[in-house]
Length: 89
Image (cartoon, rainbow, N blue to C red; front, side):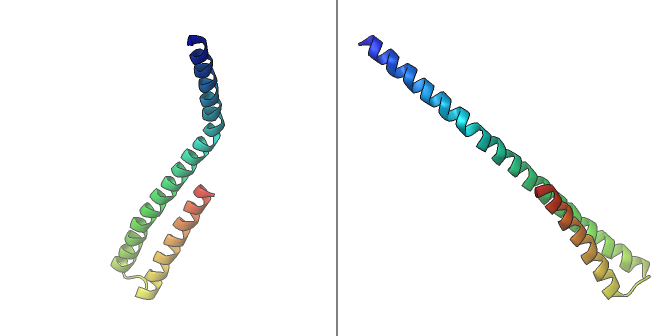
């Protein structure tokens, strides 16, 4: 009776070990993707804040029209989006 349980336990542990080893590459890939998404999100959040400052500085300096300041803000945000895409993909 004990030898049957030992064989079963040995077989079960071999199957579990194989399943864990087979699933590991997928887990590391998923973890890496999550880190890339998080880094991209952080870049976009920093970009939003930076674009706000860009527009506020532009308007405070009173060197350009409001539409030109808006365009500067758009350009800053677009650059941040592209940076985030470069991180993710």
